Picture 1 (cartoon, rainbow, N blue to C red):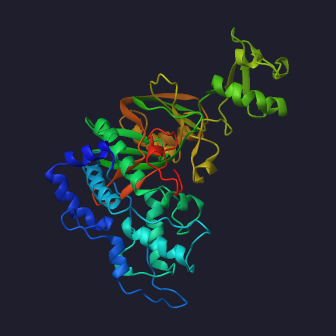
Picture 2 (picture 1 turned 90 degrees about the horizontal axis):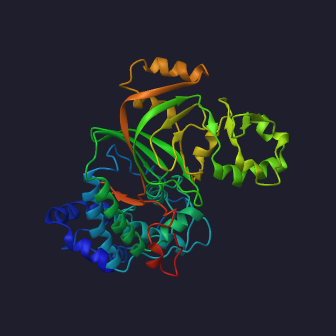
Length: 427
């Protein structure tokens, strides 16, 4: 255990220690004073023989979602407790590596399933009471779904490449992730407003929070690795219905020029107009697309169903020029890895968020907002009470009920490679 984690562990108050003991059941441990080694508990039990048909009981994955916002002082205390629990897991040797030889699902048998069961017991996803077996039964299916939900993976109960990668991240890495994110959480929760919007970039998720509770959650699409979404601390001030989209300079160079070299009608098909520095509109045929000439012009897309911003844009002051918006490509929200933008954030179900943001703005009832979405008329609405906005980078957090969440360090800001072991699947 490194010095940073040791210091954090020692600094946890008596209150946190008591809470950690209380929440240890969710992690498969009993607290520091009466720790039970989950692996030994499992090995001491009589191996359970399962029929060829496996367990026929209907078992569902325990709920891991709550209405408690991630930006909450309660989450800070929960992460402190999780650090104690994961410190004990690391001290006891961590968890076994699950051989990533083939996909595992209900009906599978073998040593890999035995290792999977042990791994899920140690992390608290599978009850010790279910016993040792080499069978992937419905109890394991429910435990895998719970694990997947905690790690932002579609909860289908199938252990494929993404789940193998997450399940074989060493316990020491997860412990240091918690320590790193505890520091971040302590900073951003020092003064939490009553009403705000929070975008968690690694989770590609949005929370609209009011009076300490999550009023809405939205799936998001955030920046690519080479075009990351920045950290933001601002206020939402304006909503643009049926906006124009001005193509950023980076996209002109990296995307638009190569597309026009292959598809000369692209700009016309997608209603993107070209303007020179004097505001004169140019014909695409006037531009030499096999040079950098296009970088001297402004490209603006007219409002339409094909507009890259969709039907609405959420504005806020930002030195990076980023914003939140709708998208015509709704299918992208179903992707497992939603890191596909050039830095801005796309919002699934954005209409509900707009209604929530404009609640206090005169002339913006639900009926009026619905009509504004339908009529295709350009309209800019100033938010009467600007809503605080935070784009954060949190790859690990915990809930007061003991559920611990992890996400991939997509931008490599956690420094976790120092703690990864060579015999496991890296982040």
